[in-house]
Image (cartoon, rainbow, N blue to C red; front, side, top):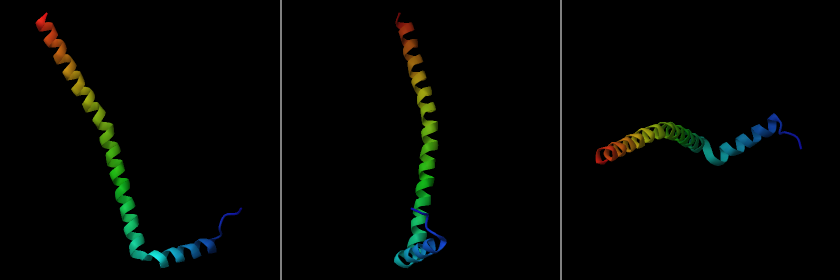
Length: 72
């Protein structure tokens, strides 16, 4: 099986543009771009979130140890 030539790619591109129109394709690409940006933002938030959770759990554990020390 061989790769499609330049003419095959052009024909497919023309058919897609005729079927969907330039407006729909542009809108679809905008939605894809916003989805990628949202995904990247979520990944950044996820990377920062565990550090905050670790700090919070360390604070809770140290408070419990302090209470145990006072009770003893």
